[in-house]
Image 1 (cartoon, rainbow, N blue to C red):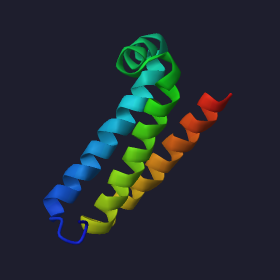
Image 2: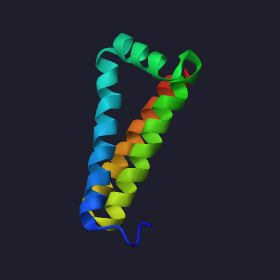
Image 3: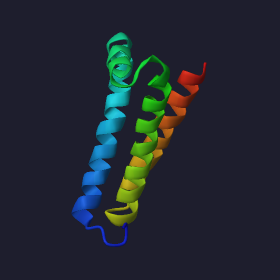
Image 4: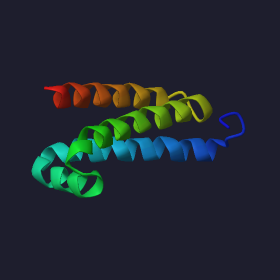
Length: 93
């Protein structure tokens, strides 16, 4: 699937990954509101799964963009991995 992907579609995947990452970080600004949104979306017990799933999806999409579109998307991969690590640490406490 990745081999037949166009560069435009790979850039779109990278952009979606950055939007996911931005939403995760913006959730820290108003944690109560973000908590209510995730509770309504997936339930109280699945918050951890939603946040980490979004982080993992951001890593995968940015990696696909780095492979198919342009090398500067590797910066997005590093940022996505940092975000995933931060939220994994923050949610595990």
